[in-house]
Amino acid sequence: MAKTIELHVEERKRGTRCCESLLKLQFDVEEARQLSTDLQALAHPVRLRILDILASNEGVVCVCDLQETLPVKQPTISHHLKLLRDAGLIDCERQGLWAYYFIRRDVLRELGTRVTQGLKALM
Image 1 (cartoon, rainbow, N blue to C red):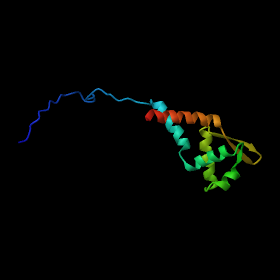
Image 2: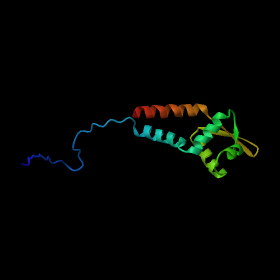
Image 3: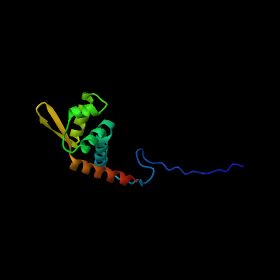
C-alpha cells in the first residue's frame, strides 16, 4: 500500500529567499579577482618557460636567446613578455636595438604568497 505524505507549502513574496543562507565564503569579490589575475599571469606554458629561463639565468636574457630556446615565433614571445611585464613579474632594459629581460623576484615572491594563501583557503 502506498504511503501518503502531506506537504505544507507556504506562500512567499516573489524574490524572497526560501531559507536563511548558510553559505560561507573564503574570498570577497576583490580577493577572487586578484587571485584570478595572479593565476592568469602564470597560466600558459610559454610564460612559465620564460619565467624559468629568466630565473635560471641570473641577470638578463636577450630576446634573441628566448627565440632560440622557445618553440614559438618572435611575435608570440613578445606577446607573452608583454603580459608578464604588465603583471609586473619581469622588466627589461634596452641596450641599443636589443631588449634584455630580467625577473622581478620580489614581485614573483609576493604573487607566490598570494596564490599559496588563496589555494590554502580552499582546502
